[in-house]
Image (cartoon, rainbow, N blue to C red; front, side, top):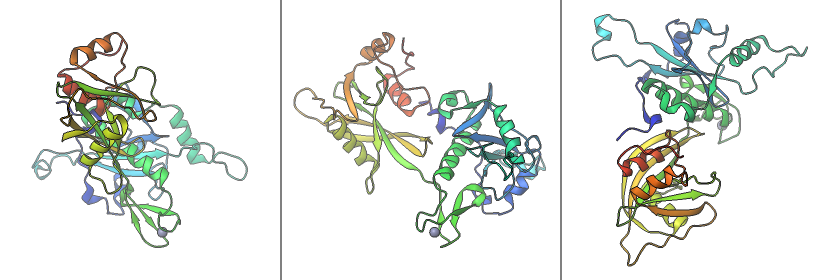
Length: 334
Ligand SMILES: [Zn+2]
């Protein structure tokens, strides 16, 4: 089975180095470092993948430590023994998150602040792309770097204050920790687990549903967030029952994909309908799910080719689960 595109990674996250308070400054001073840029949730990208910059190509001060905008993503993974051979040291990676209101800040005379003006100029010269739109075009390395960078940028943007006392927090751990200056509590990037499941019936037909807020003809696997105090397996059973009124058994984990929009981790499962007399009776909840059907493989392929069904994007774990059941890649909708 092919991995979901954003589950790929090839770099060494090098978590053991993050607590060195000089790390970001040292890495930012190395012209061999590669810096990726995040702006309003999007990444700077070129035809061939991420746009990566040497620190010397960026405006002066852009990578200043303590700004809270710079995160250490890790370094190249070297073959075992390569470092001892006196070879080149691995390349390090930083993510620079540009402020969302770039260029809007003015000094008392109404003049754009010089550093921000330089960054705004850089931002306007680049191509910004949604990670989910370019996921399949990225290399394993770029997929891993970009997914971490987008997830961290979203977390920092949403968690400027201490959840315990409400005071502002400062960024530590090379961008991976926020600490409250008032009560000294540490806070770590948040990830919300969600389950997504390929449900089949006794005839191995696949259940796909249409969510109320989706465009017409879009059908996909059912999904939902794991609730507090709930196992992922129990979440699969509950969500299927709530959304379509069916009971499942044989819940089996398949694969996961980070989905940092803003902070989900999609846990992919297979599940089979529990044995029950008669044909399964689908009863959609009418709020989250407004239509749901079972498809044989030939029915699904024909419906996709006729444009009656639009499948989720190639970047989604849903597509991976559907194609795993189907046994091959499915065509794009007509
Ligand atoms: Zn606090």
